[in-house]
Image 1 (cartoon, rainbow, N blue to C red):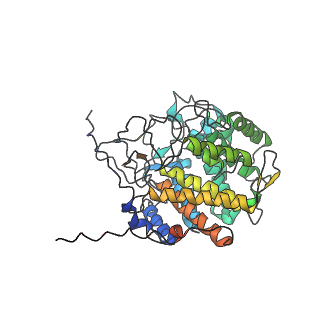
Image 2: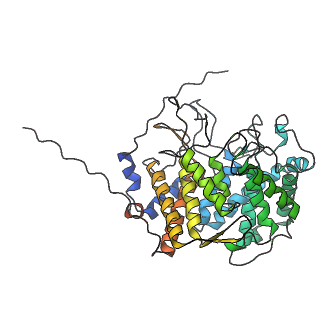
Image 3: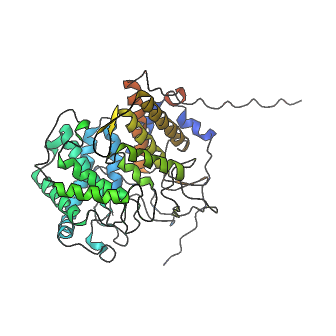
Length: 440
């Protein structure tokens, strides 16, 4: 076995170098960010997680497909009106699921052992061309992948894209539903591929996916027209009740070992699967315990910091992705004049409350852009001033685009209430260079 060469940590100039990206108006920054994301897109509609190929021997290659990353990376297309690209990406994910259809069917009948039969689960990452499994050596059983897939397929159909899906597709989705019934509210490896443990972010994702197909009005507020999809892949009331009970047991914690986790933001966006009070509680926990100057820590005591990065004592990796996610969540709270309590009764939101949420979204967005590279890349992480080599990270780049577009949309829809600061809208002017001292 060859020894891996040590990689010199890369310092990051955190202030003046940012001007090259941030001096542009926000619509131009979105365009630049989208160009960066597009360079990670492959002809079959997928997105590699990052350009990093590990040729320097410092870690695992990230220029491969993580199924979750593809779905979150293509999410930006929806906010820019590029639905055809988003559908193409989801169809690729369908093709990946079809390649491993037998694994899904078998696990929906007989539960594999999560620790000792990992090769019987749907792989979390595959080769970007062949779509073959890269390795079965670590925890592939990640329920949130199935939940996000069911949620977005149902969402696209309700938005009028049902003609893009075939009876064969719905057969596969029905088998995923059966897989969830058999495996769905038990320990998994979660978003961060660690465990197995019961995760509220996983349970919420699965519940959101099921609720999309349950078709009892839970997500009706999102759609202008009511399109029935429950008959295509029926979901029983018992499955919903089981999911709600399992999620309730864990909240507000992510798991027994984690009082809070960055992944819990998914319970607010995209799924909006928890009540208004719980949303505020989750946001408060993450902002109090996990947020840093350059990003959000994944969870308390996280020791992962990527290959080649050397933390000082007490340093924990900060993910800029979390700043974008926080901005999106606060923008969603500002979007509507009401939310719901635990009994699905409306909770009214005043303009004052909505403006407060919008301003918090702006603050997190500004901090995010300060953490981006001079070219406009969103890194995977920072450890101190060192930037990780997974730069840009595809789904983080997508979240930057979404956060920016949401702020623009809200400020344009309600200009008398939601105001973008000029430094956000027009960009920041380059810092003036002092004149050289005169020589006597």
